Every structure is written in structure tokens, then in C-alpha cells.
Image (tube, rainbow, N blue to C red; front, side, top):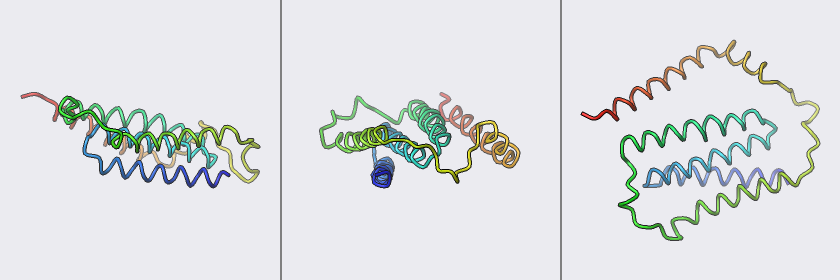
Length: 161
């Protein structure tokens, strides 16, 4: 049963990501990308990685999506007043993908949970942070500098002359 849910969610993630890449309206593309991130978080949870699932929701579906919306609003890329009211054919992909994710949640909630397998290694958040910053400290600093450069670039592009 878990394998079926996994494949359904994998299909949802792939389809939502394809819609996010091919969508012309930037706000709709962000909604599809957020759908993809939430589906990926459920996959992480299904693979017994709840910490990665929480990071997926908080960091990607939360912070990164807000940053994307900030850039779209700052650059004035989305013009909802110029777009005609969407028909059902414009909404059905998002509705179908959302229903599939909700159905996967319902299937997972109805399944009995016996805990992680005996061979799975358990690591707490403190241990994860120690490994992350001890072994990959330089990579974390480089990523934080990239985010800083992105913020400075967004402020530069949004500056009115």
C-alpha cells in the first residue's frame, strides 16, 4: 500500500513540476511548485525522514515560495487584472493534484504505524546540526552568501529610478 502511495505522489510531484515549468502566468507557476514541494514532503515522510519533510515544508514551501512571490510582486510580473477569469480547464490540474495529495494523506493516516524498521539509524536534531555544521560548514556558508546575493539583486532590480 505504501508503494502505491509513493508512486502516486511521485507522479503528482513530476506533473506539478512540469506544470510549474511550462505555466505562463508566474503566480500559477508558484502554486504548482508549492504543490510539488508539499507532495515531496509527504514522500520524505513516507520514506521515514520526518525531519527532511519538515525542512521541505518550512524552507522550500515556506521561505523560498515567499521569496519568489516577493520577486514577482517587486518586478510586477503578474498582472491579474489583465488576465481573463480562468475557466475550468485552467483549474483542473491543480484540483486533481491537490486531491491526490489529500487522498495520500488520508491513506497514510489510516495505516497502522509500527515505527521505523530496526535497522534504521535514528538521529536527533542536535546530531543533525552537529554533522551539518561540522562536516558541511563551508557549504552552508556558501549557500547563505548566495541567498544574500539574491536578496541584494532583488533589491537592486526593484529599485525605482
